[in-house]
Image (cartoon, rainbow over all chains, first blue to last red; front, side):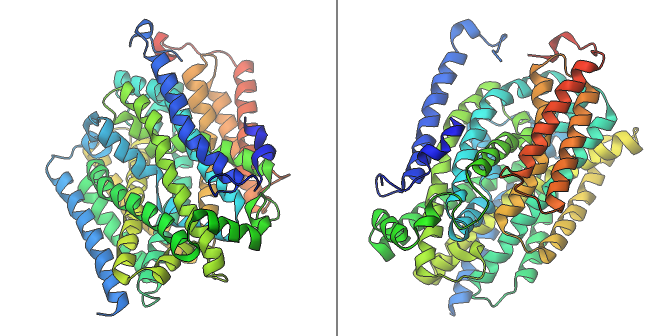
Length: 55
Length: 481
């Protein structure tokens, strides 16, 4: 993902009034907690009870 | 009342309120070493969240981010990415660290290294790296405080006397309160900072341009090159962006205080839930960037980009509101500065001084040395802040280039049984040395990559190679989770 910078580091299209690069990063700030929440649900499934935290 | 008296009065009231909360929180409990440094290991999600936000959202995010948005442009966007990345990293490394802390009674990062690698020399090296690179970070906070007083007094108070006052307040605060005081002041600080970010970040674009969209349209029209990397800089392009995001994102939880904060949580689940919600807080930084961008058209030709946020507020709003924003800013400087001083002093006394020079010191004596070091470290940072002249972001980047060199030792120590002490020690030394050489010879960025990142690559390579070459050390069964 990190090597995609040259794809999104651009001004156009302007989304919600923001240059595209700023919009893109802001979007990921919102999406990251959703992904992390998914990861949290997977990590705390009953089969992974506390004595055996996955690494 | 003159505008500067109003603004300064409000700032003073907010700082006094913050210190009051801190003193009160600290005074209610008896302070032994464990209480002073990890607050008895009893923080739940809420306090933990506040403490971590207190650490990450510093004057740097308040003044530095808008400052770079103003003076450098698009490369500033790295800030949005690295903080988000840092929480993703924390989700995976903090829970196992917490677990080890609970089982083996670890209080600091150095305790972790001592327990994992069993070498007091490595611990001393790690502690030294931690203390040395905390100083630019602390210098950043103190400079920020100076900027706030300077702008809020309408240039009536010089930056240097303001920084001196800040240091006096800071040491008093840390010496009496310890960590619990700091966490509770964060409550006030975070509320104020959110109010500041949203009101200023939305208000200013509306007042001058009629909205955020029109503002960017005007900006892009006036200065298109400012909004793609490398922005107003010649050498901060995509490679710099990627290497810096990785370097700083991996480094956030290598700070002795952030690492140590993990030990204050009640459970590892607390830390995981924290990592899930914390990225949202980064949104407030987007608003700070708006203000820096707006300042490009409204007040061009500022001598120092770091002044841009406050200068915009001063130009736009009545003095009392400048006071509120300044007060929020003052607390965002004080809280992290207090944490930085507290942990670097503790590390010095407990992990550098005691094991090397006086192994038979008791906790009480360690506490006394830590308190002396609080004063010493604050004064060193004050000295550097008075004589330094770089931007807030550059100070932070220097600090991260150093501190992230601890990452290989932590991550390999947690997840790879085969890693050995000589490998980590050599990696750390080479990493710090190479990054220091590049910085001192002004080769940052080098070949387009951030110097700290190159140091980190060398560090990892050497740590892994030497670990494979050296004899495996027997580990206790539970050493790797």
